[in-house]
Image (cartoon, rainbow, N blue to C red; front, side, top):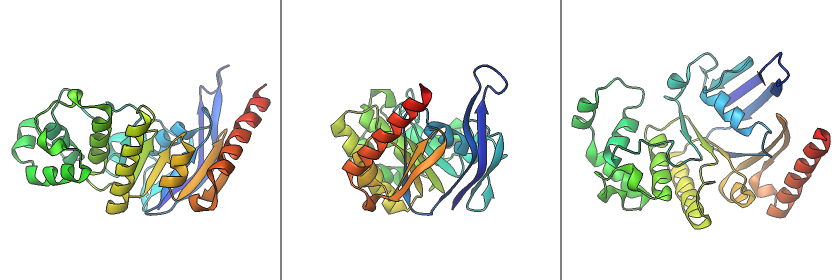
Length: 257
C-alpha cells in the first residue's frame, strides 16, 4: 500500500549543525490498517510524516502509495491522496471561516474553484450528513466561525475535513496532544469510528502508549531513524510497551552523553 524504500534525509549537510535523521530507511504500511509510530523526541517521527506528505524533500529513496510515485510530487499534489491532521486544532481549519465554508473547501480539495462558485454548488445535504456522523451538533452550527468552536470540536472538524474525499492515506500527527484527557479520548473514539467506517489506511504519531495499543493495529517504535520495534498491537501489553519505550529513551541518552 505505502512503500518507503531506502529513504535518506540529512538536515544542514556539510555544516557543524548537520543532522542525519534517516539513512536508507525502508517501511511497508498495509492497506486498511492503523499503524502507530512511537519514539522519543528527535527519533524521526514527524520528519517521516513530513517526508511522506511532501512538506520536506527527501535526499534519496522513493515513496510509493498504491502504485502512485509520490517522490517527486509537490505537497499540494500529494494532498489529493493524503489527509493530515496536526497537533494544533487550528492548523487543519480556517478559523475565520464558518463550518460550511471550511467543509466546502475540503470537499473541493484538488479542484479548481472560485470561492463564490464553491458555496453556490456545495452539496450542503451531504456535508450535514457527514457532520451528523460526528454526533457533536456541528450540523446545527453551519454559519458559526470555526474560531468560536472548542478545541475538541475544531479537531473533530479537522479530522472530518481530512477524510471527506476518502484519502488513500491518513496521517495523524499527535492530533490529540493539545487536548485534555477527556476530550482526547473522545477524539480518539471519533477517529477510530471514522477510519473503521471509511476503511482508511492510517498512520498515527502519539506519546500515549495506552492509545497506541487500544486504537491501532500495528505499533512501530523508532530510535534515531531506525525501527527498533515492530509488533501487532494485540501482541503487547501497556507495561511491556512502557518498559521498551523507557529503555529506548535511556539508551539514546547514554549514546548522546
